[in-house]
Image (cartoon, rainbow, N blue to C red; front, side):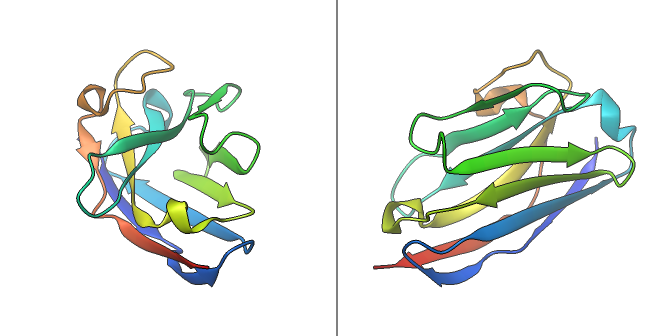
Length: 124
């Protein structure tokens, strides 16, 4: 298992930007496919983005494509989610996840390690 801690959430207005960070510890970070998921109140956890082990390949949910960018720095054991042009419907708790899995895996069941989440609230 790898331990994950997210940061960078907050309250912003529609159209603003945020960058989430997720710091990993405990295992060899570069062995893991990394992903971001989000969960809004009353809704199921949904896939947002995933990045391959080396960082060279990324995949996004259609709802965030063109606005969000996932990246990783294996030297810093950190994965990022840059979120631009935020919309009220992006409001959710954002979780990062690590998995010894194939890429791209958009199923939360494929990830064995999860962070506690960081709240992102976008006002209209």
